[in-house]
Image 1: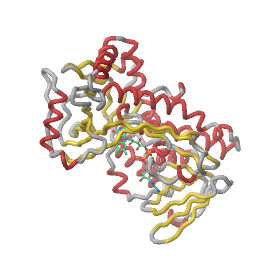
Image 2: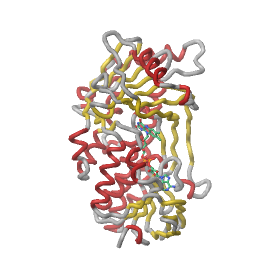
Image 3: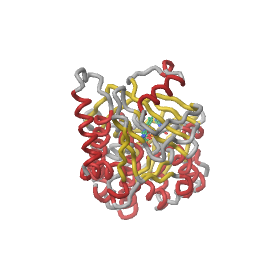
Image 4: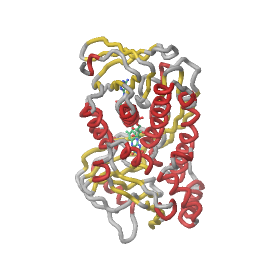
Amino acid sequence: MSATDVTRTQVGIVGAGPAGLVLGHLLHLQGIESVILEDRDRAYVEGRVRAGVLEQGTVDLLIEMGVGERLKREGLVHHGVELRFGGKGHRIPFDELTGGRGITIYGQQEVVKDLIGARLEAEAPLLFEVDDVRPAGIESDSPVLRFRHEGEERELRCEVVAGCDGYHGVCRSAVPDGAFSYRERTYPFGWLGILAEVEPSSEELIYCHHDRGFALHSMRSPEVTRLYLQCEPDEDIERWPDERIWEELHTRFTCEGWSLKEGPIVEKGVTPMRSFVSEPMQHGRLFLAGDAVHIVPATGAKGLNLAVADVRVLAEALVRWFSAGDETLLENYSETCLPRVWKAQHFAWWMTSMFHRMPDDRDGFTARLQRAELEYVCSSKAAATTLAENYVGLELEDV
Ligand SMILES: Cc1cc2nc3c(=O)[nH]c(=O)nc-3n(C[C@H](O)[C@H](O)[C@H](O)COP(=O)(O)OP(=O)(O)OC[C@H]3O[C@@H](n4cnc5c(N)ncnc54)[C@H](O)[C@@H]3O)c2cc1C
């Protein structure tokens, strides 16, 4: 039977981002059927440039799942990060402070490519370019996903629906009014991000606090640099020709004995900064994971990692339920995930508050506090350890 003919499955997964694809593969490895419905085409999903920092726990899981071969070959392992302010750099050594842990730089689109490859190789159903997905009956024992595919109206009967369809997806809104509480902050700035075809100017990431605003130096490979500038939340990208971007980056990253390498800009975009959490993360037979249920500002590099942590918990709960009929883990899904979600929210909010220029800071009071905090983080082992252990990711067992 081809993927297009399937009308019934155990787990209907909406969204082929990191959350949906990791969930699908974890379930496949345990012999549980799923169908993944994705509204974009394969090339779009595989080319979508977003996150790039993988926590140790995410890397370990991808390797355990058998999708880490290319990640092990091509991922760049980092054992520290630079915090730059007042024109000087200060290194936070992750390995020394966290018992040898680190992060791996490997683009989200590469993770997605590896997972799609594994899904197709396993001949497990994954439908691209589906339209108008409508979850129904989530309070019953047999929820349904209705959608259109290749011009035809389709219906997929499921035992459980996993909403992995990101912040703008449809699953969260299938829940009756009042069943979820939403908590949210929007920040008065965004990030202008570029990809440049040039060797990174530093081996490790640089988080830069500057009077003109935050800047971040990151990378995707030894040949591709990722750079970000704090900008207006509704910034018009047309106002930023390449020369202006480079000029601003040079100004913010100024540091004696260091220079920023320039190369052709191959991608530009503006990302808003938002914190959002829905509680709980489940209703009836619908379980939400990843950006569908929480958003973190990118400063903490937690979005993708949180999505993976959620579905790891969800997969284990579903396996227990399908194989042993034990519903306990599934009932406790939100309770298990939310402490980690809120710790990651706090870390992302803390990093965001410490590094960004605040538009309403007329007398510079907040800037002085930020500087004091950065100096403290770089001089106190306890404070540096707080940053390091959160950045590399709290142990999955600890939260
Ligand atoms: C522009 C942008 C830049 C980012 N940059 C960073 C960064 O630099 N660092 C960082 O840590 N994090 C970053 N993030 C966050 C990180 O990428 C996300 O946390 C991560 O993608 C979450 O994975 P997910 O699978 O939950 O959701 P997503 O990756 O959003 O996947 C959801 C999937 O569902 C599909 N979908 C949506 N609606 C429907 C529907 N109705 N029917 C079917 N399919 C649907 C989407 O096409 C998508 O494939 C960024 C996010 C965005 C939006």
